[in-house]
Length: 135
Image (spheres, rainbow, N blue to C red):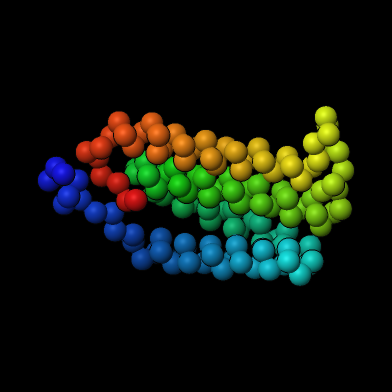
């Protein structure tokens, strides 16, 4: 291990950590509302959950490991939110096209998240073994 990689560390500033913790609170309320069938609360919680996820991604963009994981979380929240909305408004099982239901359209952002992480682990990380990372 090079000295650069061994000695470098990503330290999360306290204001970022507080934002990440608040993000978890919003995300839990969104999913609790979904589970309990409270559409208004669930839909309202999409906004801060998604917004904070985007901000976290932007603030950690200098580290590819953080950026890829945080963008994957952002598209996961998007997919999860779309799925929740389809259930709240009862069109989750309706066919969108070619036998694919609206709920299954959430697989598009889920798949994008998988592609982002596959890129990081299979392409970027093996080619940048000596660069600082957080994961």
